[in-house]
Each structure stands twice: as structure tokens, then as C-alpha cells.
Image (cartoon, rainbow, N blue to C red; front, side, top):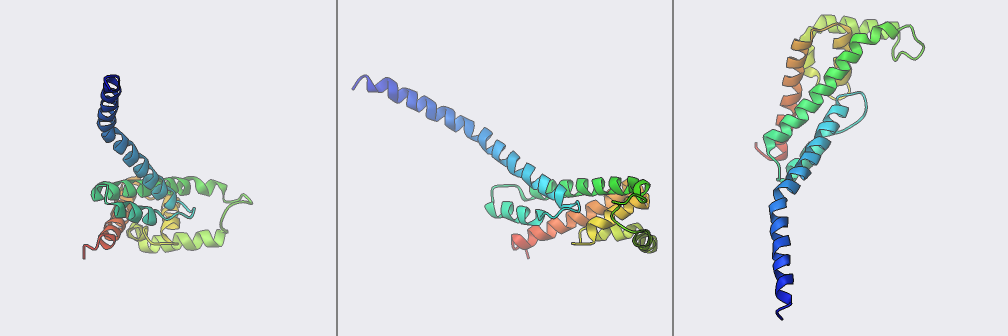
Length: 172
């Protein structure tokens, strides 16, 4: 019986160490989940198919994360993806005579006329499915300055995530 006591005390020490490590493990898990949300939002802002909204709603449903932190991570990732699109559009024209270029001169001209007509305020529609991401590429093509671009896209995409969180959490 006396020989069992050292084993018991070592078990208590290991349990104590495990309990002390719990916040670090939780932080690591939250970091991994936030990184996944950020990555999905970044990819979703590109022309590649990805549903960052589904990832956000799933993380909101776990009720283990700060709502504002999740909205912020998703917004930053999605805006960064849009900035990559803007940068891509900014330097895309130099390749328009190449065979692999994704659009014809006529399609490009139509897009530029549309953007000139509606202007930078059309970036408030950058959150829209199908047209939003190409709109950010067109803004780069039209050499939209980066500061108004980022501000308008942040308003649009941040508002989308706030509304999505409100619906998912039944705030209404």
C-alpha cells in the first residue's frame, strides 16, 4: 500500500501539469481554427471556389470563440484576398495579348466601361457572389488607388460577415 503512494502523487502531478497546459492547448486550437477561417476567407476572395461563410457559421455554432474575433479574422482574410485580386488586376493588362489571357479585348472593354460608369462605389458590391471577386480585379485594372479600395472593400465584406453572424446567432 505504501508503494502506491508515490505513484498516486506522480499521477496528481501529471494531472496538475495537464490542467496548467489546458489554456495553451485551447489557445493552440483556437489559433488553428482562426487560421483555417482566415485561409478560407482569403481563398474565397479569389476566383477559386471556397465558402468562408460556412466556416464562420460553423465556428460561431461551437460558441467557443469571440464573435468579434471571428468576424475580424474573416474580414481581414477576405479583404487581403481582394487586395491580391486588385494587385493581380493592376498588372494583368501587360499579358492581354497572350493566348492564355482569361478574357477577350471586348470583354475587357465592357468591364472597364462598366467600372468607369459606376466608379469606386461599385466596390461596395464586392461581397456579392459571382460578381464581387471579379469586381476587385477590375478595380486593379482601372488603377483604383489602394486606400479607397481597401476602405470600401472592408466596409462591404465586414458588413456581410456581421450580418451573417447576426443571422446565425439569431440576433434579430
